[in-house]
Image (cartoon, rainbow, N blue to C red; front, top):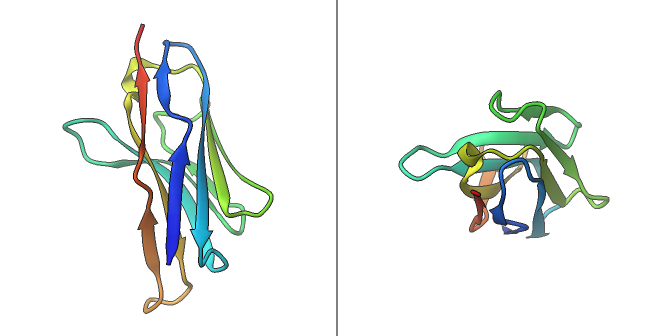
Length: 120
């Protein structure tokens, strides 16, 4: 199993920047994808950005150009750099990891989330 711990959230002003971190522990050797999701109150959880072990990166249209997802040296840590923050970015941000390369072994893991609030 994999445990995920997010950090870096907080209260930010519009136009500000922050970096979210997600540290994976446990059976991290077979993680093939890590991603950031966010959930705005009253809305469904949505993908923000993802990165695979092969280096493929995807961004949601709403954050493209303002966010950068990257992996740490051990590739068991993922970061989300967010710039030009908007009030619409206010949400709980969750880290997700996907492990396994067969249908039978694929597992999805979620962190507990970190609150990001963008307000003046």
